[in-house]
Image (cartoon, rainbow, N blue to C red):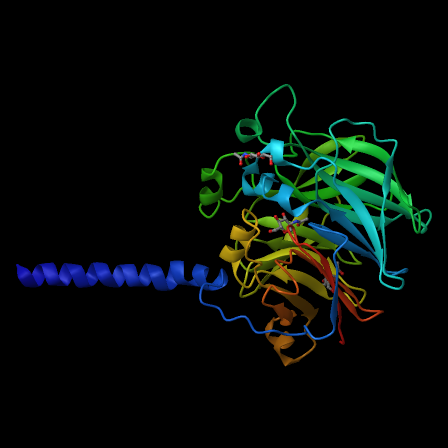
Length: 389
Ligand SMILES: *[C@@H]1O[C@H](CO)[C@@H](O)[C@H](O)[C@H]1NC(C)=O
Ligand SMILES: *[C@@H]1O[C@H](CO)[C@@H](O)[C@H](O)[C@H]1NC(C)=O
Ligand SMILES: CC(=O)N[C@H]1CO[C@H](CO)[C@@H](O)[C@@H]1O
């Protein structure tokens, strides 16, 4: 009898160890539990404190000017709909887009014109796209997390997110409103890729439901994240669904889309079809969850990676301890491994303990000028580093 119990205990224990080894430990490893942070590339950096809590930065490559979608760190601790932070009282609805010119170090807060909504701007993802008909003209696409209308409470119904399209031109201090996109498929919009005619876009829903703590846990079992295509005249439709952890999205020079998975360490490569659906062609695994992604002039994909995910999640509720940051680059593999099917080479190009770059959620590389830019959802400053290829 005793030995049967012993056998059963041993079997149960080995099952638990197995579950830990194969299912829980890999997740804890990806989330950075026990990971040591090793500084890389932190020597030649400066910080620019006049722009804060910029969720997304986009480089205008020809001029080297950076566009930033910014807020205030304290309002982020109350209002980040995708993180179930839905205290509309604490939200900022006077968020702004700024430009930063690294040449003269000038910051310009762009003035909003032709946008009369009293519902304001509460910013998150952004894209800035030169117009196909006039390269000096730029379309700016903004995810705008509005509070719900009619006295409805955000914790119950979620944010009433819209996508706002503005027009500007290089060097202009103004953003002129063009259109507001509202649609039932705007469930939990996160990031956006806009078209060069100012009339259509793709955006990620990071999750398939607007509210509920349980929605987050269920994701690993039944993923509900998606990508949606919208046309300002014809409305919105799904481009891809049942995905996990969609977050940052960006488009390469050809029609290749790159989509970060913020719940697992993965970059998804997708090709656009004639009907605006997206088909998965590659999945590149990384050792940490990644966030907002960008592509540089050489076609290299850059992603902000969280060395310590739990520290990052804590920072978004309590600004006391700045979490570490890193930048991963995904380059086309030209080495021998390409022969065995490894199309991309993943490399850690930057890592910091959080003192210089507190909780980066967005990284952009100016390959022509040798600069790396970092910002973060709650970060108190922009960080600009020299980067040699
Ligand atoms: C919501 O934000 C307001 C304004 O910052 C704050 O006073 C209040 O305590 C917050 N409520 C919760 C539940 O955190
Ligand atoms: C586009 O570029 C990416 C990266 O260079 C490559 O993997 C992909 O196959 C290209 N797609 C097409 C349709 O040419
Ligand atoms: C635009 C975008 O992709 N934003 C994401 C960047 O990172 C933060 C922090 O994880 C996310 O909350 C955003 O959704």
